[in-house]
Amino acid sequence: MNKGKVTLIIVAGVLALIAIFLFFNLQSRKKVFNDLKISYQGQNSEYTDLEVDTTILNVSNVSFQVVSKSNNTIVLATADPLLDENGKEIGTEYKVELEKYTTICFADSDCAYLTLE
Image 1 (cartoon, rainbow, N blue to C red):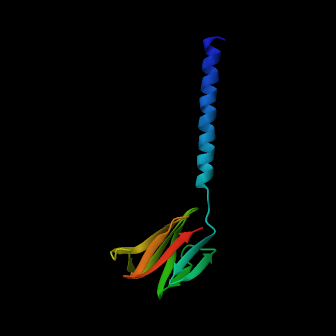
Image 2 (image 1 turned 90 degrees about the vertical axis):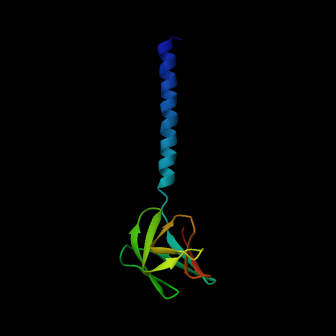
Image 3 (image 1 turned 60 degrees about the vertical axis):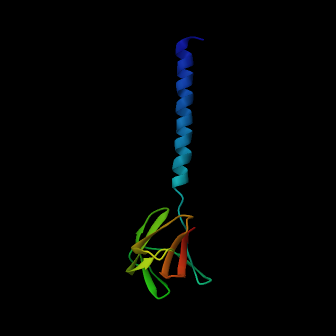
């Protein structure tokens, strides 16, 4: 074989590998959550059909509103800032990501766990 054909075969192989990698990488990013699960004081709640600016969730007398929504993330907001697990104030907006637990606390040992599945 001459050099031109070998080079062409190598370039085609590399481009095919890049295309396969990009295809699977983009497919993994398209995961969409079905519902928000909240675990609080041994009680589990499940919320489906979350819509921006219309859904209000109540946990421990605290109202949450969905302010942002994407395929794998939602952002919840409250009127008053809450705490993290260490007792530090974390603000009024909380990002919840697909298959990752988010912890928010109302007092020192009074916490809720949120996740998207």
